[in-house]
Length: 285
Ligand code: ZN
Image 1 (cartoon, protein in one colour):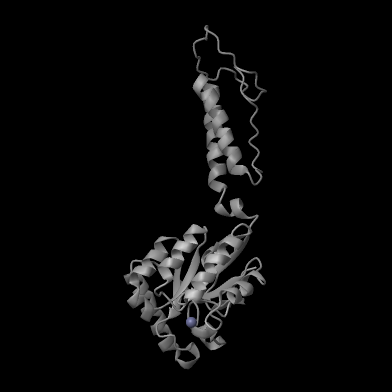
Image 2 (image 1 turned 135 degrees about the vertical axis):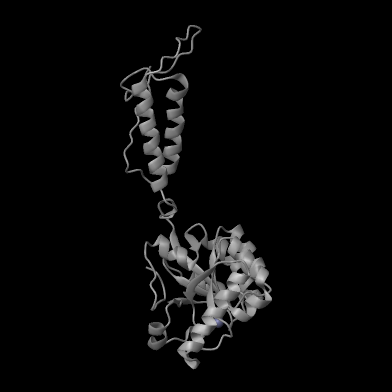
């Protein structure tokens, strides 16, 4: 019996997973009907089902070969990371500061509906009030990172005070049941080299500022994103304003076909870069 020629070339193209699934289907044929041809790598002939089907003869060599092929397919599936499946889309990180607040859970729903995730740079004082929202955001694939406890400018605090704010906020996040990221966004983006050098965190700034706290207007927020957005951007929003939520509801459907909307950590990962402590970042190109 002959089976289809199977090319186990490792250089699968973008439709790799589809091909693998197809291969698995093809491979199931000889397994079901038994493989008696020592050289399995030949062109197929249509199998005619007649009344006189010969008893299946097992051939150890063929079984070994199929096991090897299965192993090969398994390896290919394992090496096919999410990255490879999505590389044709541009990637940007969505970030929300100053929450959680009363709109956060609604925002999480909108993110879910649009296959998007975001990093929430939360304030300790808000985590105390909206613990459930933190956990809800986290459980839905979003990243919970640190914006400080009191929203005091880091430039107005000592290194020790900044560290205390970071530690306390981290502790509160973890008490909510969520995992805290080590990423920190300084309130107001206020930071200097002394803070960067002395606090063992990665500081995440942004390169697109929607100014949603200033212009509480859906069109204004939309324009600031849609007109400027590029691959690798980090976009700043605040999830404590209703207009921001309304704008997100309109922005995400417009972006999702062209962009993969992810957390900051995912942006680094998908760009195959690692963030380091004592460094600040505005975008990931
Ligand atoms: Zn802030």
